[in-house]
Each structure stands twice: as structure tokens, then as C-alpha cells.
Image 1 (cartoon, rainbow, N blue to C red):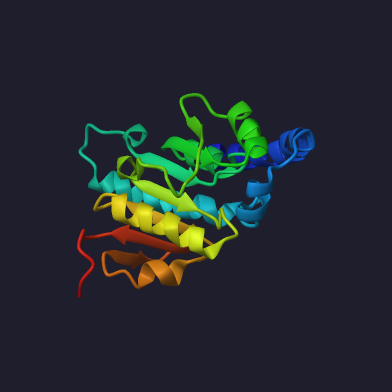
Image 2: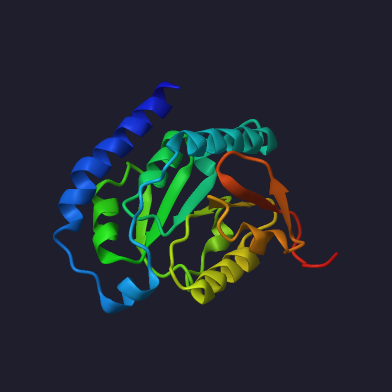
Length: 201
């Protein structure tokens, strides 16, 4: 609980000081303005912590006794300034954030936690989703066509036994229709485990 409170305090500090001060220095590109959301503060960090804690316990039960949570990889797709990556880091995950917008990427890189990673890249073309145990997103793009391109790539590439979390349940119905995925109850929105490779009945 102590690390959770500290993580929440850190997120608040980041939003007040780092986000507002740093983003005012940068101009967004035309492509970024038209297709990518800039960071929006999560409206309920407690629910995110609860969901990550639940997932952590579930993954621990599945892991060999000699393993630890640093071997479980988490990626935030469209991480903004990295607020969720900090919460995941506090929960003990091996964390990566990927962000397209240069301004928010610069803030996320400056606030990156020791041992975690921030990548500047496009989530629709990113090629390493198979490396992760947990894939998280919160509507990182405005364009629904590009959102589905991202989801199709992530869902196809991710390994069986991995989880995908849609904060606020955005595009949850899109994932739910795919028979490769099984819905898991949680407090954040839509969380699914990939249970098989072939999309059939």
C-alpha cells in the first residue's frame, strides 16, 4: 500500500510540474494533431492500481517459484508522459512505454523510472508486441481506422497467456468479438487474456 500511495503522489507531482511546464515548450506536428491524442490524466488511478494489483497476483500464481515480477513485461501503448508506466513500475512490472508525440515523449523520457524504457514510435507499426505479458492502452489515437490497425497488430502478435487492457473499455467490444480472447472482470474497463492463436468458435 505504501508504494501505491507513493506512486499516486508521484503522478500528481508529474502532472502539475513536468507536464504543464514541458509541453508548453513544444509545438505539435500536423500529423500528430490529426491522428494522436496528447496525454489526458487518468481520472481514476485507484482503479488502475487495483487492476494492476489483481493482474500481478494472477501472474504470480502462474509463474515458477524462482521467478519474480521483473520478468513480467508491461507496455503502455501511447504512454503520454508515462503516468501509467509509473504505476506499473510501482507494482513491480518490467515496464516499457511507447509514445508518438514528441512533446509528451520528452517528458516521459525525463520522468522514466530506473530500469524502465520509453520508446518514441508508432504503435500501428511496432513489431515487438509478442515480447510483452501485458499490453495497455487508453485511446491513443483519434482515427478509428488507425486504432483498429493498432489493435489488429497487437492482438495478432501477442502471445497466448498475455493480457490486453483497454482503459475505460474503449474498443472493448472490438476485442470481445475475437474468439481468441477471454474477458476478465476488473475495475478499469476491458481486460482480456489471449487464450488461443486461432480465431474460431
